[in-house]
Length: 241
Ligand code: IPE
Ligand code: IPE
Ligand code: MG
Image (cartoon, rainbow, N blue to C red; front, side, top):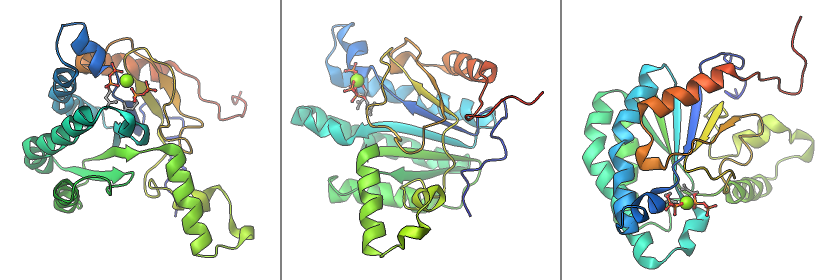
């Protein structure tokens, strides 16, 4: 059964919010700090945002933390980002677990050190039965990569071409069990997808707050959710009289 046809399709409260956490580097540069200081600052607000999301009754929060293209950054920055992921898991996982958060990963864990892979897997395992909120970590994730991965699996499994439809393709995505995002927020003012949830966001509402990610707080989240509630989602149809 697909979860893509969420009953809340026209609800004013999004069921799934996805965030492209952008602008850490510029946040730091504007303060005369190294880019890593921005990445670190960009983890300080996570707890507040996750709590606020759960309080709003939003069931899924996806966080885009590292794209397949981010491997083209300097080695030191990549190493720093890996280190930060490790630190955040160490610092937050027990509390998130206690608060009923389930961690899910989308993308490829290979490419990460085996220690980090094990840490992510252990966090997923620890929280797998939690139901209050689902935190979907997009790390080493790319939308096109996901589609290629899905096509390869379908070919390997010799899927009958007559069976290929949107529901089936959705099942081959990393997000098989996750409803499509209702709202995508990209901070920092950039207005592009940067390879985020290519298949899943065709009818998502997109909001582009100007603030850099470390400055994104509960008030900014509320503004985005309010703006979402004012949007008129039509899914290609016409409004009923
Ligand atoms: C987002 O911040 C975090 C990652 C992409 C990992 P950036 O590092 O892209 O910050 P800017 O866009 O350079 O300001
Ligand atoms: C997108 O931001 C990826 C993440 C936030 C993880 P980037 O900063 O990498 O994207 P571009 O390069 O500006 O498109
Ligand atoms: Mg950026």
